[in-house]
Length: 234
Image (tube, rainbow, N blue to C red):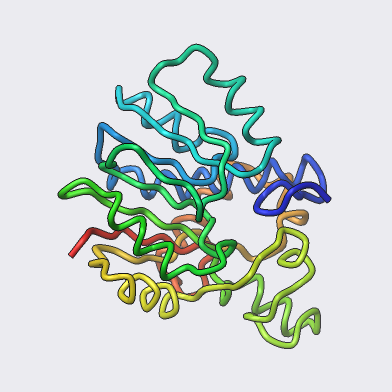
């Protein structure tokens, strides 16, 4: 297994479906982005940074996994709008404030999430926003897996959690509590995308079907695959 925090995948095909579905989650969050200074914590394939650049903004990328650092440096070679830091999230010290900080699927990997969130709050410029995304531990596919006897409870760590170095999981109530404890004002907290099966089982599903599952997820947010929160400093 490669470095924890997002580098492990069962196959390239499975990595592809995860990328496609996470792009749908990002699409839901884009209207909340504020520029021009963006901090992207946990770069994987540029899905956040590319959109910031499309808007003419700048992006600082912080990533701990060497593979992702190498890919980011290759993708943005010579682009003065992008600064890349190879650093642990909890030890990184910024040299400027940010209008939007994106914590995309990283909160479950940090050792002290409340202290980490409190530090992020101090890095925001006045009127700035924090966008947090995390998998929902009570999602439909985890509930189904429990009823099939694969786990004893939807919130129990499974084999995939162990493989990617997951330290904890969240549902909507736990995520809200974490953010409020760090003195954030939660503007919006929603469930997003209904995932009925595992990534491997969904690998060849069409984009049209995935978009339909995105829309159905709006009706069943407590069963959705991902959670996203938009926060501001109190």
